[in-house]
Image 1: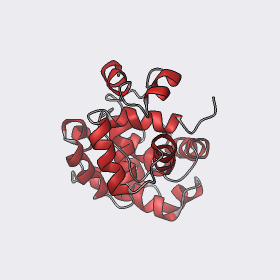
Image 2: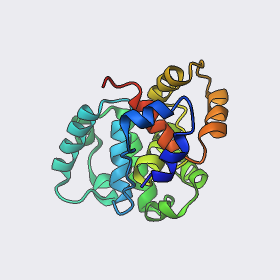
Image 3: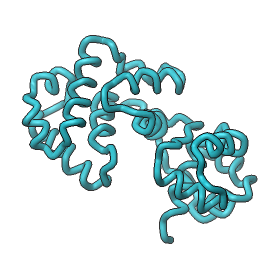
Length: 198
């Protein structure tokens, strides 16, 4: 899927060794999933390890019984959500997401038809969804090719390790735009890989 991106990034001296070492980028868009459920998972996963987030989401799914919908979330008592292991801020964020989905303020089903900037604008209007979550959604749910998540700690650490430059959100974003666009998503994947021991 990312053949062109990989060929492009092989020309970059700082990323070339990583492309050779790690091979193909494994990000695959999930264009046919239920974006509401995906966003609930993204909110749960904020600042948590994948394993902990999976446990909390699994508890929530058990309580919901069946498909997770905005209607079911809105009917649930906040304490039930809280008892799945979520912080109150996440409970409020998930309720706000459900309310906006239910009343049509957030048109979840058509997010894949919007530009990256429009998706960000729609998502950050939801309480508790910030730029990081919007970027993760663009990258991992929609498979958008040119996203550089400057709020991500792994990106900061990977950028410094790979380029030898001090990370500064604005300057680093400009560097990524100049050197890695239109494939900043794939470049980001290689930055994350640079932090793994293999």
